[in-house]
Amino acid sequence: MSTLLISGSDTDAGKTVVTSALLAYQQKYLAHQRWAICKPLQSGMGDGEHYQRSFELTQPLETVNPLRFQEPLAPPIAALQEGKTIDLGLAWQTLQMLQQSHEQVLLEGVGGLGSPLTRELTVADLARDWRLPTVLVIPVRLGAIGQAVANVALARQAGVTLRGIVLNCVEPRTAEQIANWAPIDLLQALTQVPILGMLPYLEDWSNLDRLAVAAKQLNLELLLSKTSMPTAIAGV
Ligand SMILES: Nc1ncnc2c1ncn2[C@@H]1O[C@H](COP(=O)(O)OP(=O)(O)OP(=O)(O)O)[C@@H](O)[C@H]1O
Ligand SMILES: C[C@H](N)[C@H](N)CCCCCC(=O)O
Ligand SMILES: [Mg+2]
Image (cartoon, rainbow, N blue to C red; front, side, top):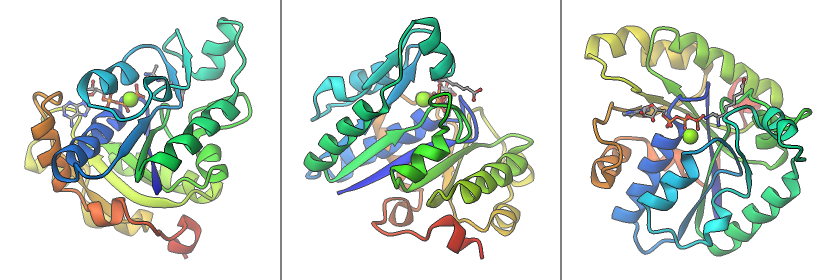
């Protein structure tokens, strides 16, 4: 059994698209395995609905989004506006239940690695406390290098075990833009974490075959490996 947290540098970085590509890959090429998806805290509409609509899930549907908030805001702000408290224990129990019945659990984070889950904890804190190997989704745009360096530094400081970075083309990109905005050698030199590949811009990312083929281009061996170097060690 293993769990992977798909986090990123920001909201709209492409966490859902990358997670969907991994799930599509499993359903096409590893159909004998049982994988589960969980977005433990969801604010606003979209992700959980997408997963339930697009995939044949083998898990109870209520485990996709254990905690939900109406407003598309940071969970502690949305919860306050709804007069709700955030019980991470419920999310933890859901994850443990999924881990006991699935070979792989894909956990989608909220916003970026530094985004708040409660008034005390960020996504990075949860990744550390729950010992979640984490991948950072970084959108390919001017500024990608700075976002990668900043979020790897946050992961290192928080004690998060980073599997690496997945670059993601949230909009159509030329080869020149990709080379200039997200140069692999410079990214690896400055962050000291592996670049696990890039997801191209997909016109129709609801097409599971296209998502599965795109996922095949990623370094799945490292991404889904059972062991990984904690960032602190990798960064020495
Ligand atoms: N590789 C891609 N190909 C095509 N469109 C993409 C791709 N990645 C992202 N997008 C576009 O960017 C939008 C945001 O991506 P996505 O929903 O995956 O972000 P997210 O990080 O999951 O956001 P949130 O923080 O809301 O969960 C998508 O709805 C889609 O329109
Ligand atoms: C609504 C959106 N899609 C996300 N679910 C919530 C992102 C919260 C980000 C908060 C922040 O880091 O400032
Ligand atoms: Mg998402």
